[in-house]
Amino acid sequence: MKPKAYIETSVISYYTARPSRDLVVAAHQEITHDWWDNHRLNYDLYTSQAVHDEASAGDPQAAAKRIQALQGIDWLDVSNDAAELSEKLLAQKCLPKKTMWTDPIIEEIHKIRQEHAAKFNYDLRAIVRDYQRRQKLSGKKIVSFTQGIKYREVPNDKVARQGSYESLT
Image (cartoon, rainbow, N blue to C red; front, side, top):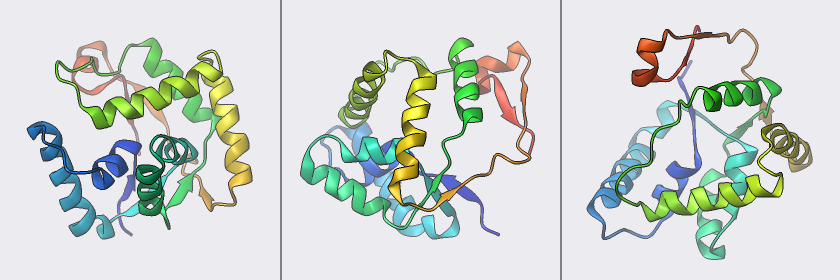
């Protein structure tokens, strides 16, 4: 059985974007191209309704390239467990701090996420319900791995290094 990999919006965005003149962004694009072209077939790939929505937004030509790259990738179920874990991670401030440099590819994704969250008054549960509703209407193959996955809190001295939750599976 192959390992599983979740394809997040930044992966697709780096893969399909025009080459950047910014050296850091160009390096991210090059690494992404190498992984996509040479290593992705070693993994079972999964994405989600949220990634599809983000990839569909913005410039229509760029969005079409992102959606094309996502073709054939199964979608993970948007579960209530995911919402609960997200709330815990947000409450414990486990998100990385903003970097000192600006990456236009990532900034576009953040803008799309911000606009979507604002539609729901930043209510995480309402956002998840919306994704769940639209996921049902998508006609996509939906898979779930929530059975048997349990998370435990990591002691505070580890939080700064790895986040506050780790998988037990």
